[in-house]
Length: 221
Image 1 (cartoon, rainbow, N blue to C red):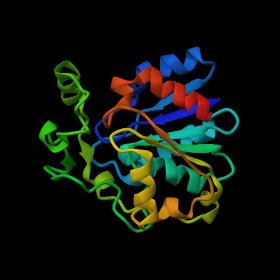
Image 2: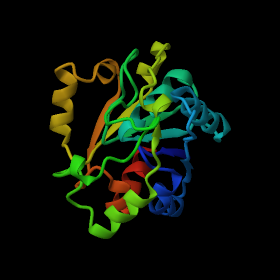
Image 3: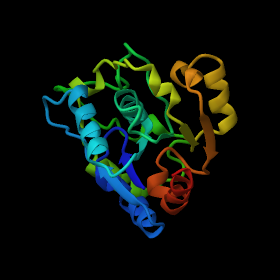
Image 4: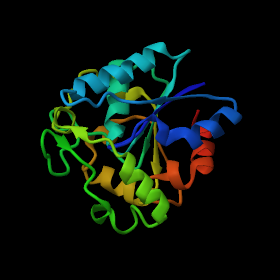
């Protein structure tokens, strides 16, 4: 199966290198997606890049979103509900219609740069060693303001029929279910098929548990 891999904020397709290698060994075709990120890039531009990858995929691909990009995976399900076989959401949840995509940190000179590790102290980054942290920070791609503050638009309720797997890294399945049941994730509250997977990692399992994450993705596929 084709498995589209969309990294969260500040990441490009290379973040999935180790996961992709494991997926290929398991008989799947990983497609890491590098999103456009020029100064004038908008959320619509990134959605278009994801949809182009969906349309180019063989058969009905599984679309994997990490962190903020869980919303991009969900937007793909909304735009292509009959083409996307399943969405996998790693360490995040989809935003609702009318909400900003990822307006989380300070915008400077038209972009949202990586804010440093202080913003992620605790369970998010506890399993990242200093070498990995340094490499991540050095390679971090500033998020264009037009992406971070772009408004999410969802239009097709058939997205709720697309199966969802929530991969829980720095939080557990029980916590994820509680957030959904309490109304904090209205999109998943309406999804008809939601499964949960627990992975013992911080927020970036593609860096710290790539083989294990690939096993989960292969099983989901």
